[in-house]
Amino acid sequence: MSRILVTVIAGICFTISTASALEKNINYLARMADGKLHRAAEISGNIYGLLKRCPALRPSEFGKAVMAVPLLLNEGLDKHLAPPAKFERAIRVYNRAYRKAVLSKVSCQAGKAKDPDSYQ
Image 1 (cartoon, rainbow, N blue to C red):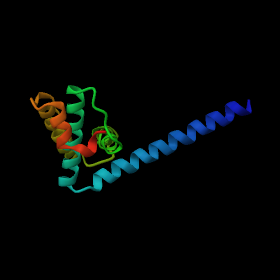
Image 2: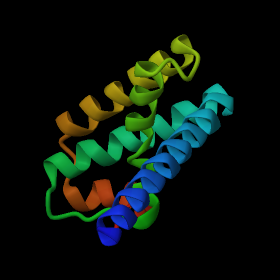
Image 3: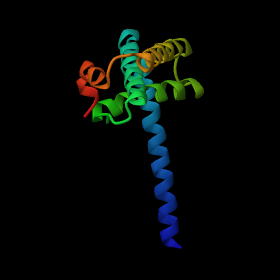
Image 4: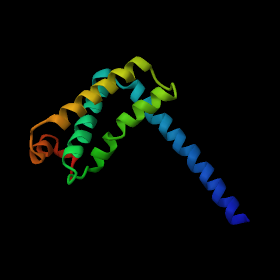
């Protein structure tokens, strides 16, 4: 019984800390300058688009962190935690970059060379 109780309490604490971290990250993006936010969304769209075309590529730690940007943008909009117009513009930038990367005729190696910090 006590093991179950400890497990439940640990799960609740983890959920609360995860929700708190999620809110902190969304607030960080909300305070970020538009140009910087758009650049992060663009990099994220490029990474997702290139990974769709080239599944053999693996994102680096930086790439994985940047890949969270569109998820945070959508979560911020869904939960009304951020200015909607700012996040909607950033999502459009992400979608444009993603579409452009998927439709690009550039080779996988050339795409990787364009942003070497994002891939292993």
